[in-house]
Image (cartoon, rainbow, N blue to C red; front, side, top):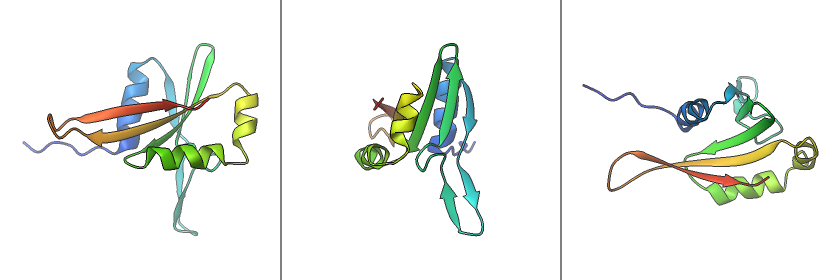
Length: 108
């Protein structure tokens, strides 16, 4: 039986839902520009639960590059002033187990 391939975004959606969040994908494909566009230039997922809003950038590589991109964004100060937490989810496949491993960096 073939295993279903999942994207890093799909894995983070599942993880966040398991943590009790209501989650929405806030990136989309812009067919005219032929690029993916993220909310605020860096947010892929927006998650909420009682008393908390979480903005998430998801990646399969280069977590430090994504952190730098967020920190240098003109929008990050607005997000922080709104008390929205910010996380980067980095997914990699374990060489030992073959399972995906999640690295979470909280950059609020």
